[in-house]
Image 1 (cartoon, rainbow, N blue to C red):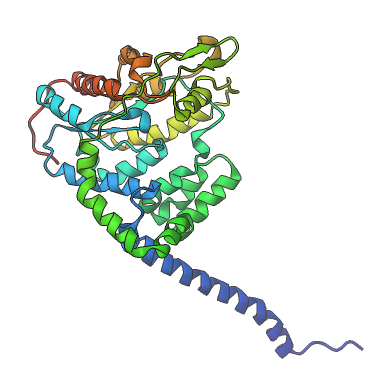
Image 2 (image 1 turned 60 degrees about the horizontal axis):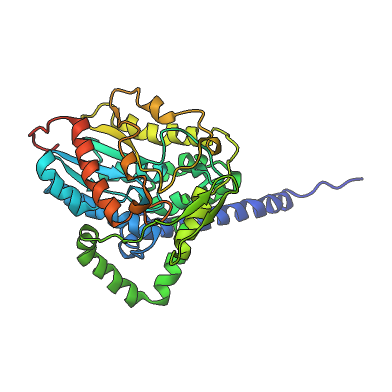
Length: 381
């Protein structure tokens, strides 16, 4: 005859997994609470490594928030990666003629996903700027081996700006499941994403604090008075049939690497991922300013010291022209900056040199003013 287990034994058997689950839940809540205290307040973000992705993002936001106070009403801001580099001083001098102040929130290595989160905190009312000027490699969508929808650097740029309610949306915006998971856990528990920064701080806390203070004292002026390199690409020869480059004497390894990685890159399969990424994130920026006086201006940057042959390109769609159909989006003519596409104006295969930047700065200020029309005098809101 079978003997039924006693109720006490059944309860004990059930209580063990319940207690374990409760202990895990409490441990997670404690971990999340500590993480939130350190990283969702200004306690740790105030001592981020200034020369890191996260630190540079926060420094840019801090600088441009300060600049808004005295910039007047006819204020525009430029977004982009390192290829959008221009001289703030050169643009500032030009503003005396154009009537518009054009600030730079350009962050090397960033992309449209990062720009969205930057703008959300830089311009909370979506009315501070007359224009958001965005520099792009091309108006066409050409997929490459490196796709921005899987660029986990966006997590490290925007980590301080990500709110708890952003976590799922931000993570799902990545393409690969493994990168999605990395973005999700980093956005949820920010200490994971900032792990290397924390380790560096704990190794030399005094040095870090001194560095942060130094950057807050000097970085705005360093940025304003920056002098670009005078290197150029004169003497470079490219055999497009053989996909080989001949370099002149004295060309640096960095210059050669950009030629190999950018000019001589193979034609990639076209998947439509770049188009989707742009429509998502540039579309969000445009939507954010839909009911605002602020215009979104797209410009096509100078493509390089040499142009890749058309047969190496795969230009099937143009998300930028699709976005330009919206009433608050303006499109600069595609060939506005073609005059810079010369080896004498580039320091490598991607970036303008001192002479190129000076010309680009003046042309960018003029083009922004032309697209916006005569400036208006009105109190900033």
